[in-house]
Length: 247
Ligand SMILES: NC(=O)c1ccc[n+]([C@@H]2O[C@H](COP(=O)([O-])OP(=O)(O)OC[C@H]3O[C@@H](n4cnc5c(N)ncnc54)[C@H](O)[C@@H]3O)[C@@H](O)[C@H]2O)c1
Image 1: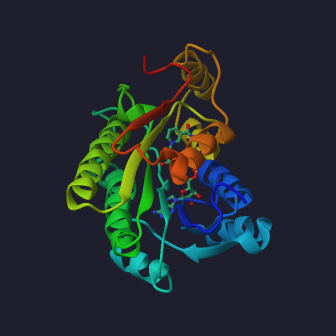
Image 2: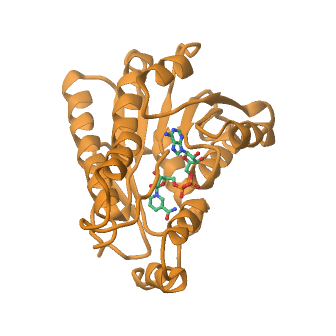
Image 3: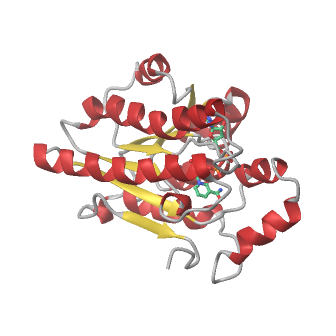
């Protein structure tokens, strides 16, 4: 018996990076995994690599109709990982309104829509909603104005939902994970937006007292805890997995 045997888990952004690492661990622990992503090629390949334990559904987290289609055939959901996200690099003087809006569409509206869509599938039997916020949701950087604002919104949205579920007596828990910099493709996408990628990379290292970036498996481990019944008393909490960066 795995720690997630008998549970169905949907992971947004499961085609790449942290979502893919979470999908691997969940499948290894016995969950039925649904990888939901904008990238159909990589998402389908990721699901295939996990064998019969996983399948892929196309999803744009920012679109209500896309959520309806993705969840259409699912009768019961035990775990939702709202992980899909993007990172817009830039300060308040650099980011355009269009970039700011897009950041919020994916990173904030995506979590809002996913949570709303999951409630009817979890209400009767309970479930765990895991929101991927960030160190950037609790600590600001001058060059991450849109990302800081979006991830901070996820931090408090998580707590509001946790309170609502508890007050209504739903057995649904909602927690947020706050990774420091973890070397995944999102980091490469941010570096590609910079004039000086080497200096930016070094600044990512230096923000962590332990002087290294994190590994995707170190985030998947906390997601596994939150998905499993081991975390039954945890709700509305911030799990900061950041090499000490938020101290
Ligand atoms: N890597 C880090 O250092 C780090 C640190 C803190 C938080 N995070 C957060 O972790 C999450 C995952 O990041 P990652 O590093 O794995 O990035 P990644 O770029 O490797 O993966 C993100 C995935 O999300 C998908 N995606 C993007 N927009 C989407 C949309 N509209 N609908 C559905 N899927 C979409 C992408 O196709 C991709 O598969 C993000 O929310 C990110 O903000 C990452």
